[in-house]
Image (cartoon, rainbow, N blue to C red; front, side, top):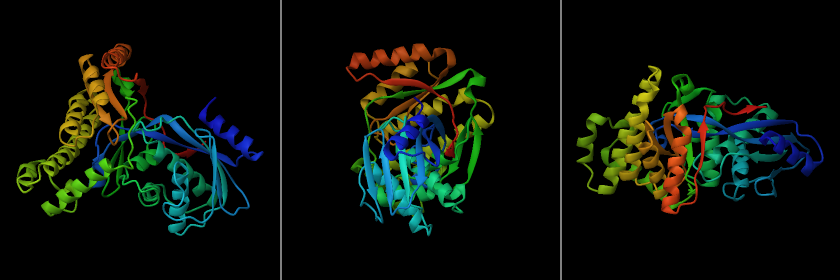
Length: 380
């Protein structure tokens, strides 16, 4: 059964009636640009076919009732403030709160959710949930809310209501990505450019390796990285680390006494440049050449930002040893997924090499599949 059919069936079985419509939003893979978003930097995600679907209908109210087939649970709430609704339902309540806080009269609604975005994998299941619900409620309410403004509202729901200190990349990808494109996002100006990303035309593919070592964003490690970056910017007297160029990096690092902060700053400054270099290569139709940039990104995340774990490091090493052009962890870190740029006809051999490496280490087997750039949030 498709995710859309599952959401529709869940709505029907819970409420005994048909939904007014189905709204979908995808998960995402970040091709390159990790932890640069909250540093006002550059990112390059693309949406994946896996998605969250919300079957929604208005009702007399008051309040909102949400069901999810992933947890087999129904949650209802009325007027709500940050943190009052916990767990998975908090992401929905956060969207309602953020819309109301922005001055919109959110219609009471019943919502049934279904998703095939892997949870805890670094593919942004939370942003897919937020974006699907936001798109649905915006349509139902007839709100004048431009697409370009929606990621910021969804991010506010996650930052303020849920309490996760994420940047704006995930929501931007889930809402604004286009099929067959990667989304080049300037996280300061919020300007976007749709970058052609038709790997099949060049005989290439992106392989996604879910390490099955789950990560969590609402924890001390993610927040600590963000605080280190903010402290680095304060020491250097710049609005954000995006304002330090690679040419200025050595001089900037010499001003920082704390070795940990120095490493964090070095990752962000070099990662921003890797995003720009990757975009230049893709614009020129030279996708195969981005491989070394992907691998350099992983080394920087491993050594300078210190957010990788053994499972993702082993997946990267095995992919490269089997002939991948480049490989890196994708997502916030401490588990999650790896992406590898490979020749299309090398998918089976690369998959087998990674599976064998996991087996030899005694790790839980990874889940591996090819990813193609998909469409952002929409009504089905």
